[in-house]
Length: 174
Image (cartoon, rainbow, N blue to C red; front, side, top):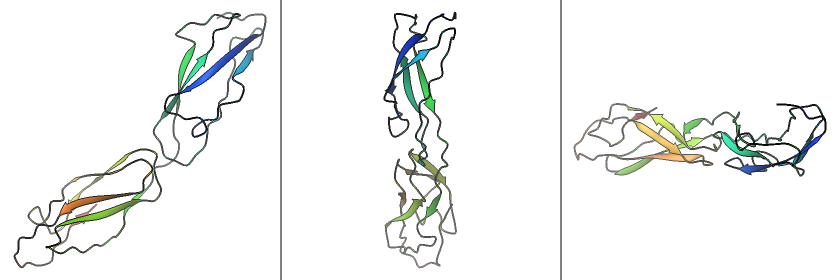
């Protein structure tokens, strides 16, 4: 790279990939700059939006427009810029720490909540224990999913009624 002894105007643009203007970054009103004489680089600052939403990595495409005063190549005239989220994920909890079901209840649910929404889909693993076993219910080891921007989900399963008198049993979900 050779520095020119004159100023070079540089026009540029940003195309959204999955990062969105105003949600993730702020597109400046003026999308051009000047490369000073005898310089080979200039820093362009794109303000990022500091939100509190836990999100996946988001990207935008940064494009330099061709100039009569400087050569550009297809390989060096665009770049993908990634925004790495710095917000912590939410905490999951059971809506009710203790829930009582009867053997003849049939299909039942256990509700879970996030303390705040996430911008990404969350798959939370859980395990099943207790004194009740696969003869007593259909709940087994798995994951519960929370869709983006939601705070509630549930585990649906069936309590199996064997129509026999038995002692109370427990299902522990962790």
